[in-house]
Figure 1 (cartoon, rainbow, N blue to C red):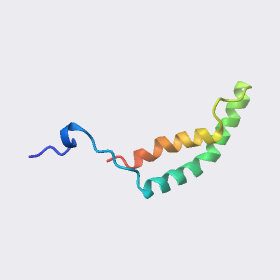
Figure 2: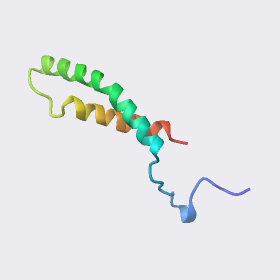
Figure 3: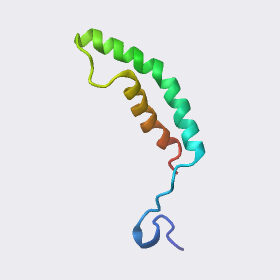
Figure 4: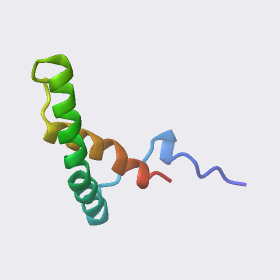
Length: 73
């Protein structure tokens, strides 16, 4: 049997993200914004200083880590 787990010469082929990826990213980002805002407020109150990253950066990071997991084979 052939081994189809690796690309040519052992290199994986990098595909450009499709429109579906960006749709899921946008939806996850929009859902994550309120939760990130709440977490930002709580962190600000508990630490009594402003966090380095704001709620939008936190939501962007969450969407960026969740969305690729959806499309992982």
